[in-house]
Image (cartoon, rainbow, N blue to C red; front, side):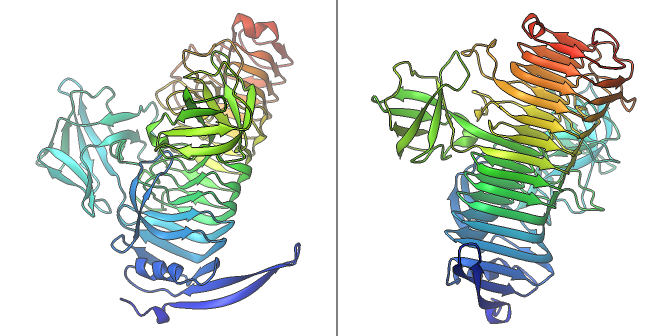
Length: 609
């Protein structure tokens, strides 16, 4: 054990809040650089803190963190796998926590949840970089494919990666006795740009047999392969869905007044920044991307940023998100489904998605909306007076007022209180799987002055009462002055902006869901047709956009329309300009045409006037 007194020093500093004349003592913990595993050092420093307000200050350097002496705790983590997690920095019950990295790099090894914050009133993290010495991924250059004999050959990456061939299967990474026994979630990448390959499809791969060839390459036999990767691309795999979301780099929940500034993440075993039931969050001047000069084509395993049932103001500004294997940001609430009505004021609800188990849907004092099929719109609301957790799926919620007599099994509830306003400004989001931005909050949304490039839809607005059960509809959205370049280049059909609720058969598909969306003054350079694809929107303005068809790739869906409207009301398409050869400009069904306004557009061919 290192001598702690030479590595850690404790200083008490008193801060005065001039606005309220309130004083509080912050305990400054200075941690000097040392070689070897630092897990015990930071654990003891945090556990020995005397007060509830602490600031960790790291001497600039590279710090290593292994999991042998990490804190172990069972965690429910939304959109990840629940289970016993190893935690390096555990901040539970502190009033305020500050971390000053001074430009240090934290290098982790093995399965760990690096940072967990629970119940903090103020969090400030700055000047820090995170990475893993061995990524939890496998990748190889695609050398050859043979669709008739159902195999493909890879030249596997060895330096900086960990894997072995055992009994005809690839096992990786083999760190601390953990292995993925199949390639699992896989995508091919452009070797030069590291972006997901043009036309690539998500696939879950489990080869029938792998053999080592005489030249050292690996031949994967897979009779279930549906889309073979392009020769010359890099095939990247992150393991099976059940195990490949261990934990985010930063898990912050039941906390508020959070500022993350100049924090870079090169790898993580789940999301980058995950916030649950937290409020007032700023992510500034930060990034998630592959380290310069690295052979890796993936940064983190899932979303760059994710906000589940948060409130207050959320701001993401001047950040760079690249290489992750899911969305740039996902902002949503949670739908729970009515299991049974217990009495006139109490209902038992269920969390329906496997990765929502244990999530805290509501607390005492929260206002809740009731959504009754077949109408997907928010109508009734009530205030929570009691919450009784039955288990990780079911919860009994008692309300202040009597429940309406029409409430039935299969209806859904949405938390009204925990919804944020959201601003995303001046960011770069590109070269990753899935969407740049996916948002569901009824409060103000501003997306402006971003540089965006996407495998799927660049911006998606989608509440859904099945599958992910992520609520809900949007009511005030401004998307302006963004630069969209090379969007929707994966194999599936998407659009630059896609509004498409997924509500299930019980709900009426003709009733509008999202409303008041402005898509204005954006610049769009894209090879394919679809720009805006909207379903069940009331109040959509598409105005002042400059659209240029590029020849970077061949259109994948040449019969698709630039503007496609389904069951929409009060749509205006005006003062847009187009340069290109697409003749399929506008498709609107009978309902959408009734209130559609089209005027002062230039350069469009076909039926857009």
